[in-house]
Structures are given as C-alpha cells and as structure tokens.
Image (cartoon, rainbow over all chains, first blue to last red; front, side, top):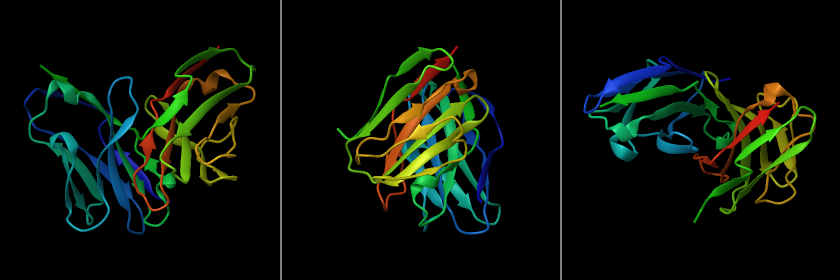
Length: 115
Length: 112
C-alpha cells in the first residue's frame, strides 16, 4: 500500500518570500501524485497533479511541483507568496488504473503568510 | 455549474441519535467517496462507491453506513453517533477514468 508523508505540519513565511512544502511518498509501483489546497472554512481544491511526462508540473495560483522518482518526492513550490495563499495544503497519491477513489492523503501542511 | 453539494453544512447532535448527511453531484460521476478530516490526521477515507449499488469500506468505516441507490447521491449514515465521530466530513466524486476528485464544501459535525 502507498503512503504519503508531509514533513512539515506548519510553515510560516513572509509575504513575497519563496516557499517549499515538502511531500514524500512510499510505493513499490508507479503512482499519480496530487496537491490539494484547503482555504479556511472551504472544501478541497485541486492545485496540480502529476500523472506522467514532464517532472515539473505547473498548477493554479503560481504554484509548481517537481516529481523526483529517485527521492520519491513531490515538493510544492511558489517563488513569491501572497497573503491569500494562507491555507492548508495536502499531498495525495493514488495508483494508476486504481481510480481516484483510492486517494491516500498526507496529514497536511498549514501555510501561514505573514504580512 | 459542476458541483458536489452536502447537507447540512453544520450539525450538532447528541450521542445515539441517528443522523444522515446527504451528498449529491451533478457531474454524472461513477465514483463517490466520504472522508473525515481531523486535526493532525489529514483526510481519511470512510467509504467509497464505484457505481450504483457498489460500495466498499475505506480506512475508517466503523460506526458509519452508506448507500448508493442513485448515481448522483451518496448519503452517509451514522446510526448511533458517538463523540469520537465529531469531525469535518467531506464528500467527493470523480469519473471512471478521471484522476481528479471533486470535493463538497464539508459538513462540520459535533456529537455531544
């Protein structure tokens, strides 16, 4: 079975500074990887996903993530954060062909942007 | 507008009083799931359904029931709620060959 580890539960960062949210996964086979964002008092929204192809994936709101198979990582980055990026971010994994109903989530990273 | 809706959004109840949280999607998706979200634990899957009349347990099914009589609806039933079921619940749906799950707005449940 696959698993996901988000290495930081909370990340404070100043506005306009860069940020990286770390995600490592464990799986003996190829996986699909996702980042979801949850703004305060809202549901989850897909930020970006890696299925295959280019290892650098661009998402909404200026976020990007890089898939690193050798390090089994899928870290999320943004070069300059805004106050509106304050939210909780979830990394998730599923197996190709398994259907996305079998998503496994990490425990989440709370990003706090400080003005 | 494509969406997943949940009702109610907020619910306070007492131990042992049966309740149902409804979930409906208008995207004709085959797959539907229920998750609970607890601080420090992320989202954990309760039950999922691959199609009408096909349901299966997720990671934390104890104390919950589901049914899938229609494609668009996937209610979550707590027959005898207990305080440890106090949580934030999300319904989600996706298509057969789709990798992306679409989430509802969440239902915040407090069991006293």
